[in-house]
Picture 1: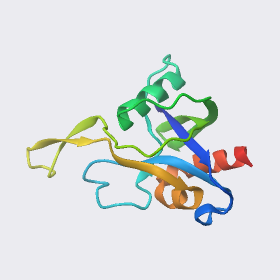
Picture 2: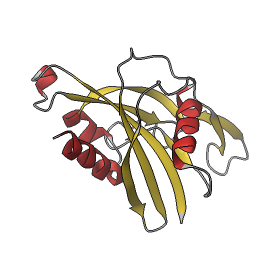
Picture 3: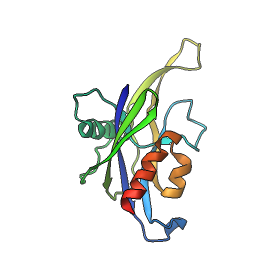
Length: 159
């Protein structure tokens, strides 16, 4: 089983802002690399990354947030939202926190990939190419389908 940990930041917005009845906005990130470059729908994720137990999942989530955003996660009170099965071979432990900060430039770490495929040319691509605040309705169409359960869990917790 591949284990990963992530941070889901949220902030309250005025009721009815941007057509969102729940008044909640989420900080999510668009996945980098050529596969996701021209996609928007279901091409976003919470900032996350792999870890290997016995590493503490919150420590891993905070580290991965910093690596993907290029700046540290905000000083906030992080609460375990839950562990969610993403696929038969992958699960993610998610920590949520209320935090408000202005959108910032992303300076993500990179990964090597042969591109174009079978060309013999290896290029570096950012793990994340942009991030931003989105209301829950927009996040539902942007998040990869396996993470919709994370969104639902946060909205249920916030009531």
